[in-house]
Structures are given as C-alpha cells and as structure tokens.
Image 1 (cartoon, helix red, strand yellow):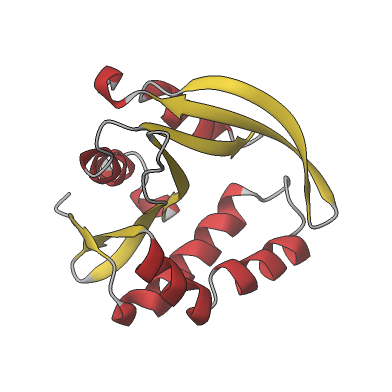
Image 2 (tube, one colour):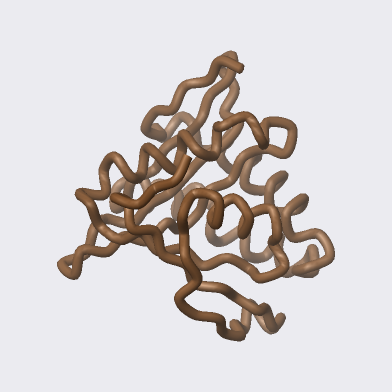
Length: 165
C-alpha cells in the first residue's frame, strides 16, 4: 500500500478528528463506555486543542490517496531525555500494513535518542501487542480514573537504539 507520512497542518484537523473518533470507538468498544469516549474526544480533539497540539508538539499524519488514515502525536523531548507518545491511531481498515510502524519511526527520527514513553490501556490488546513487537517494555501498571471510569493502564518505554522491526 502506498502511503506517506507528513507533519499535520491546520487544514488536516477535521480529518484527524474523524480518525480519532473512528479509531477510539473501535479500539475501546467494551473497554470505555461510548459516552465517556465521546466526552474525551470532544475535548482532546477539539479544533482549539488540536491547534494547541500542532504548535506545542510533534504531530504526524499518514495519508493514502489524499485521505488522512492515521496520526501520531509526540510531546517535545524533555530535559531528562524522555519523550511522550501521546497518541498513535490508524483507521481499522489500514491497520497491519506498516502505517503504525511508519508513524512510530517518524517519532523516533525526531526523538534525539530519547526514551519514548506511552500509556496503553491493558485491555487494548492490539495496541499493547504492537508496542511490544516494536520493543517497548512495561515499566509500570496502575489504575487510572478516566472521567469516572476505572481503567487498568500499562506504562511502557522504548529505548530507540533497541528498536525491533
């Protein structure tokens, strides 16, 4: 499949919102109640929040035939040499064809060798397996209160010099 990864632009906001909503509803069905998902998405992926994230973080999108089909958002590298992968989502129909891997590689490329951290819901087996295959290691498990819904969350870290294909 031919796709390209590029930096997100303000013109991509609506497409990113659609990817976020579709991906969240698919990924967290049966894990997070739909009402809580929709409330979270309305805030975290509002136009204002996405503009703020565009200006203050690294935001990459994956495009196939002019259509945004995935994205990844990375916080800047900290003084401690760490970086947070805030989100990586690919539409269900495009998963399993290396798009997520390419979005991860885009972050690694700008990481300056920093450790990359991510929080993954324990029941998100597709996400957990993806990160494990890429070399992420579990560093912590905790219960998170997500808008009144308790989630079991796993914190993982990737040491970029140890990435696995």
